[in-house]
Image (cartoon, rainbow, N blue to C red; front, side, top):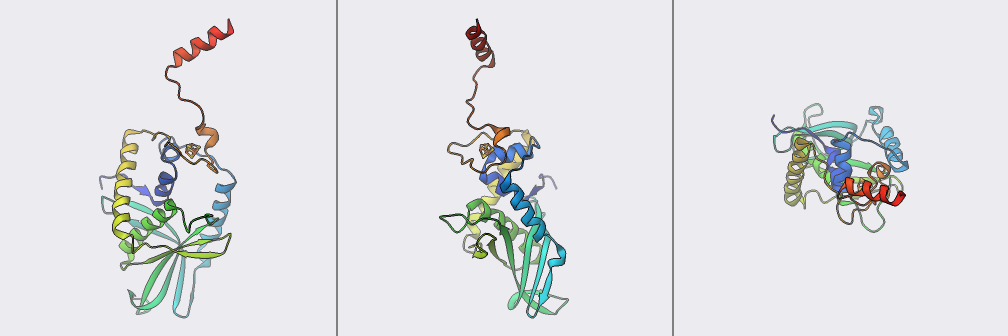
Length: 224
Ligand code: SF4
């Protein structure tokens, strides 16, 4: 395999803020805040294999590792929860000799105010779908579960397949270029920084300095 492996979660980070993604993946920096801690605690609870269960007509698996090792993707990650519901048009599971429709359930702590989902969350789950379909076959559904309102939102992963499949490939190729060159993407114009745990490391409101020498000379002059 000649392309760099990329974690599915990275896609969400890159779309939220490419600069933040670069700090995490190129600089290997890390900082937590209340939002990160809240999400980590929630995922710790979800990623407990003892929570996997079977009921009549349905199987629920938690913390399912998935991947897509074709060169243009080379993605890997863990799905919070994968539900398999008996369906004659689904994929065949030999153990039960029955067919099942798979559905990804991704947990998020907070529902966005004016929209059903954030696009970066959608794309993260779409990348999971590419991996689940690759590993298990079929054409899985996907939902987000918001724990603050205890509600599921169905994601249009099938309707948006062609557009998003292309978008994933473009994003992965951009990310690999930055990784290969060891470069951190610049801060985007209009970047929303509210809630970002890396604010203290990133200092987004500090103005760019054109010449460090000139800046030092200015400081020295002002002190004379
Ligand atoms: S503070 Fe803003 S610009 Fe800096 S990493 Fe966070 S989101 Fe990106």
